[in-house]
Each structure stands twice: as C-alpha cells, then as structure tokens.
Image (cartoon, helix red, strand yellow):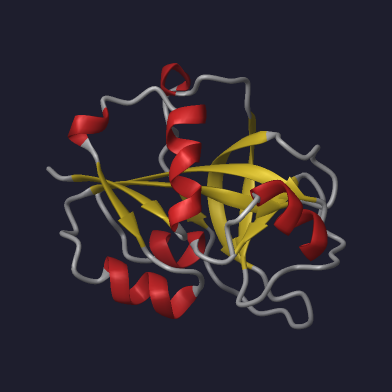
Length: 162
C-alpha cells in the first residue's frame, strides 16, 4: 500500500518536519495545488488503496494561531444555503505521530478563502473535503491554524506560501 502526504503548496512541506514524526522514506509528498480542481487533478491518479495524509494551513474563527488540529471529519463549507450531504469521517492519526499537542476538530472546505463565519471550534481549508471524497483506504489530516479568518494574517504567518 502506497502512502502519500498531500500538501497544497510547496511552502507547506516545512510543516511535515515541524509537526509530524513519520518515517518519511515510507511517504511520497504530492503537491496538489490550491483548491478543488487542483486536488482532483492531482489525486485522481493515486491508487484507491493508498493511505493519504493531508497537512496544511487552515483558518479558524476562534482557535489560536499556531494551533495544530487533528481533523476528525471533513465537510463542505456552504454558509449561505443548506442541503443534506454526508460528513466524511477521517481516520484518526495516532498521537505518537505528532510532535506537539493538538486539538481534535472538524474541517470545512470551501472554494474560497473564508473571511467570516458563524462556525466556531473548527478549521477552514480549500482541499480536504475533496481529498476525502475519493475514498482512499485511509485518510488522515492535520491542519495548522494560520489565521483567524484574515487573508493578511495568513500571508504573514505562512511567510511565502501563496
């Protein structure tokens, strides 16, 4: 079974060494690009029996910047309309693979940067729900809070990740 670490941008590669304790020779890093279309193009060729670990930056309305979130399930972020869709439960990354304390929470994926939300105690990204929808054998996710729904802060914290 192949193991892949999916990151949206090359600048997020530094998060792997900073936050994870993994035998990296077992994992291949794939840079997907930001957003749904890029994720679909990058992930569609990966074998379905793969183990996937998505690590990247995410915003949060109330988690402190720098918090590490072990994502329990993924959902789409569509705050202006409601319709029934399944939550996508993720596999739980064993805590021994994390170098730091973490929060267990939910990740909402959207098609744009989230600048405001009534949702709290969660994170927002632009890739995870699309990755999880592929139905890989195992899917884990770790998100590092880069901002409190501020594009300006995101750019400051990520220092060069576009």
